[in-house]
Image (cartoon, rainbow over all chains, first blue to last red; front, side, top):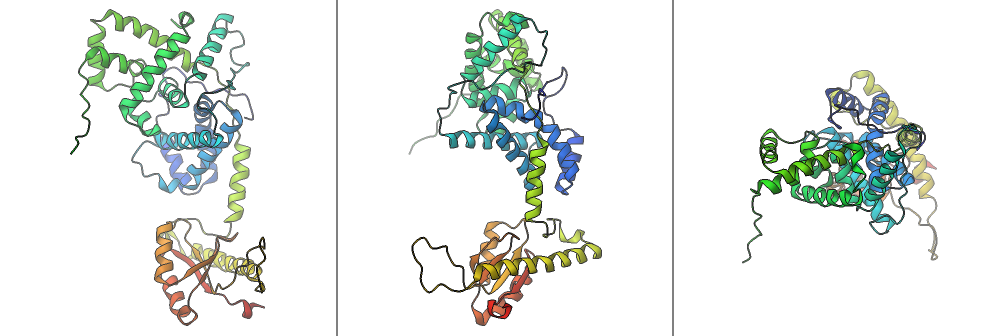
Length: 199
Length: 213
C-alpha cells in the first residue's frame, strides 16, 4: 500500500452500486482507453482494498490480488456481458483470486496472527474507549473464516444485498444468510459490552 | 431411486426476521421482505432488542478505519509491460470499425510483427542437434508456417483451426504472440490459404529457415 488513505462509506452512499458513470467509464475501458481505466482503478481500488484486507489480512497479498483483479478487468473486459452489475463482476473476480491466493499459501484458514491494523491517522481524537472497541472488533473479525468475513464486509460496509453477495462468493443465498447468522452471533459474543458506543 | 432433499420454504416469521436483519439495517431488502420483517418486529420484543444490537454491530464494522492505499504506479508499470509485449498487435476491435487509415496502420503493424516474429523464429530454429543429452535445452525444429491469431481467439477455436489445416503447433506464443506451425509440405499453400481466409487469423506466412539464411 503506497499511502494511508482509508476506505470510508459515507452516510447515504449506496455501497458499490454501479452508476451510469461507472458504465460509461467501463465502456471506454473496453475501447482500451488507458485514462478511463486509471479512473476506474481509482474508483474501485479503495473498496476492493478494504474488502481484500478484511478477507486476506495480509497487506502484501492484498496488493498482488488487487492488481491481478483489476488487470483482469482491463485485459478481459470483453468477458463482462452485463448479466450482473459491474461491481458484482469485479468483486467476484477479486473474491475468486483471493481464495485462490489463500489456498496457494496452504495455511490454516483462520489467521494465526491478525496482520490487519487500524489506521492510526484516522480520527486521531477518537475516544480511547471507541478505539479499544474497534481493536476488539478487528480481533473478533480475525477469528472468523475468510468466507464469513467476506459476507460480513460485503453486507455491512459495501451494503450489498444477500443475492448479490451469493453471486460474488458463488454460493446459494441461504448459505449467505447462514454464514451471516453465525458471524453475527460470534461477533456479538466477542464484542459483548463494547457495542454501547455505537448505540 | 433417491429423491433430492427438498428444503422447506421458510415461513417462520421469527426466523426470517433473524436471518434478514442485517439487510434490513442496510436497507437492502425487497419491499415485500421488508414489510414482513417490520410486521414481525412490531410484535416481537426479542427481535426488537436484537435489531438494536444489529444496528450497532453494522455501524461498528462499517466505520472500522482500515487503511488502504492507491498504487496506480504498480498497475501502470504492469500495463506498460503488457503493452510492450503486444505493442505491434492491433487492439481487439471489431473489424468492421476499421477505416482505411486504420487498416493501413494495421497492415504496417502486421508487417513489423512478421519481421519481429520471423527473426525470433529463426533464432529459435537454429541448427538441429545431432543428439539430446539429458538436461539439454529443447531445440525447436520443423516449423514451416508462422501465424498470429486474433488476441480474443478462444482456445477451442484455435484447436479447430489447427485441425482443419492439418497443422501441429511447434512453438509459441513468441514474444510477439506469434505461433510456429508445421503443416505437411505438400499442403502448405492450401493450409496458408485456409488460415488467411479465417477471420480469427491476423497473419499467416510461410517460413523456411533455409531461405532466410
